[in-house]
Image (cartoon, rainbow over all chains, first blue to last red; front, side, top):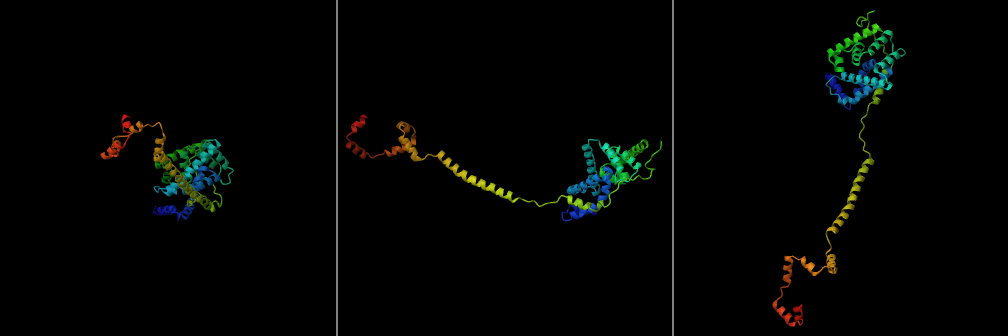
Length: 180
Length: 137
């Protein structure tokens, strides 16, 4: 924690800011890529959202109060950026978020940056049928293997509610896979 | 119906692949997009412009104040000589009109002027041949 406070000081000090931000980039670029990719699904969109996320993190550094962990603050920005991106893309195409996701999942079959078979495609389609919050909880728990406490800090939801959400998501996914 | 339990199945991976060497230049790409703090630049033209405004105001006041003073002097005070000439030459102002403007104090002042010694009066009366004419008038 003390180490994080020192790191935040470095991020806020104009003299050390650039060096500290490069360190932050190195530390977070891969996990954030995976987090965003599980939400927006294709690489090109992930690339855009990931860059925007880091620019936003830099712009809002002065507003970071230090009340929560840097990790959860950055993940929350990334989550918001990804969801906003998806909603805007759906709006531009005049379709619902679920339709857009299904279309993107169909395109995954031909995506060079996707290595999956039928079961993976089916699982993605099952996830797309869930409400937004359940999708997020399932992806963060199942694919990213984050702890409930970490997800709780990122989404601002209690651990109990997250467990219930995950449980409902799993049940719906199992039913989807069985019936489709 | 075939049962499907996520917990019983082998872990299903997302299948997403990160392009090779994607992160090699990612940091640089982001660093180039960061907003840079630039020192505030005050345009010389703008600075000159503000001085021009100040100078124009001073010149404007310099022109307006004398005109205003000149106008206010003329409007409230009348030159004494002009007034005197006006009264003298204006025939429709009678002695009665002038007398009506005199108050007690003015009359007192005038009575001091008329305080002439008796001998002078006697002399005047004895030498004046037209006295009778003055009395009858």
